[in-house]
Length: 212
Ligand code: E4P
Image 1: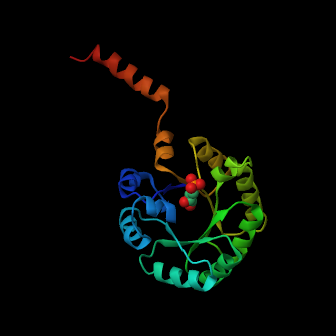
Image 2 (image 1 turned 90 degrees about the vertical axis):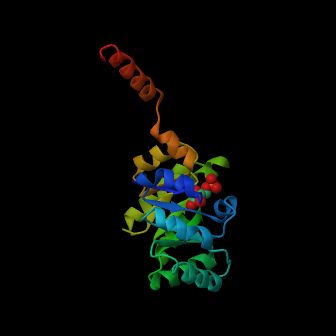
């Protein structure tokens, strides 16, 4: 499974670049860094050689397509995030014809993912954490999307998004999701286990006894 970092923070991306397959951003994440997409995305592309998602702000398909064409010129790895709306699906269909890669975002059901895949989306991003937040089962939606894509052999890849904890990443991997896009704090937690720390300390303490 590929791991993307879900952030627009350059320092966080630099710290984990050695393990990253890509990066996702959104308007909230860019605003958190006080930067526009145009300011931050080219810098991210210099650090990680993989798909880097930047999101359109228009709500109509014409505006989305215009923004997407412009953003896709920034770097060959830029992927255009398009929200899951009727206008968004129209835009994805057109951009797919033009060979511009898209990430259909704010996906909360298998039907939405089906429509995005039919339009030619490169990626769909089901938001598992936000579904869990309203008492639904986010990972169940991911499982359904994977089944649907498998049934019809869609090439569209599933990015498990709105990840809140390492267990979401493990569940995504167990289901066979293509990608999980993970916040910085969650990625850090994935590396650690109390028994690993305890084991390292014990090994080093023991070895001190024989070191000359
Ligand atoms: C994914 O592409 C989104 O940027 C992100 O995962 C949303 O996560 P949130 O629900 O924590 O805002």
